[in-house]
Length: 389
Image 1 (cartoon, rainbow, N blue to C red):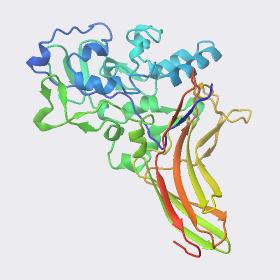
Image 2 (cartoon, rainbow, N blue to C red; image 1 turned 180 degrees about the horizontal axis):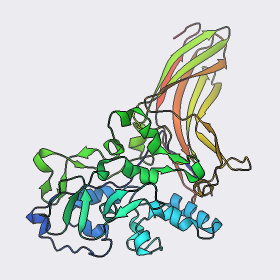
Image 3 (spheres, rainbow, N blue to C red; image 1 turned 135 degrees about the horizontal axis):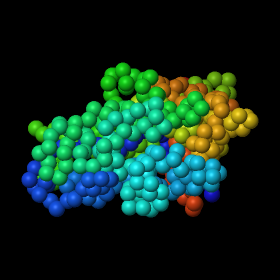
Image 4 (cartoon, helix red, strand yellow; image 1 turned 180 degrees about the vertical axis):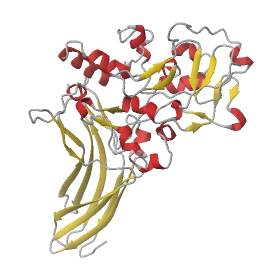
């Protein structure tokens, strides 16, 4: 069934990035056993890294396999492709399956989606490979903190990839047959944030106060990195993306022209980003004193057509690579301001209230009806008869 997920504004991007550090005696003395030959459950990690685990467990990365939107699309794609979609979808939603072969989405490790140990077992990324993750699974854990073996439970290996946007690219850049279905990484790479050395992690894994492990604060007062991984499903993150204002109102000859400015002020990639079924809709509403209303809107989106010229509006079809061409892409670039003009046939003598707002609209298939609606921003003014603003 169709459900309307209207949360407003975006962004973008993310994979569980990993941050571990040396443990002191209070954490290291815990009775914790890692799997030396395979992936260790995040519940084991939680015994020492309780704050980080608490952040991560409510993230979309932790819910990568349990998310009802993913499951609906995955089941559909799996059926339509005769099972071929399994490796494609689980490569990012349950990448541990490459090693475990545990394809039951409710399995112990698979159900953890982007689990702690997967990201902390990453040695490198090779974007030329279909499965781009180079892993070292066992008792060595990779992260941005200093190399060392003073943790009794596992060895720590410093990793540059965990603070690099290339880590995000492994799942947030998808170009089947050369068609840029998801281009979040390249949007960042070609924008001002990359030039300034601001990686994805700066916004999606900001520094916060806390403990790396139980009893272990960050070295010399430094902060640890949030593992909430807030992105396009986070209302808080979405509200940071755009700035909206009524720039001008002109009235003459029975016509009212409203100029609206929309600025991508808080996102390092285009807005919206991710799968093309996400849209940004700018609404302008004029209400007269007698209650009569006038409405106009502007849609920002990426539109894909298949080889037969049909628009693709289904996530499963898009992800299976059925897109042949991009026929429209007017999404807003990082730090770009778009000025849009809305014209209404309104007598000069009429007083009018003007409302401007932006919705982020996503209409995925889910197994049961669900509606989420959050207004992300609003601007209003009064236009007096014969006046300009």
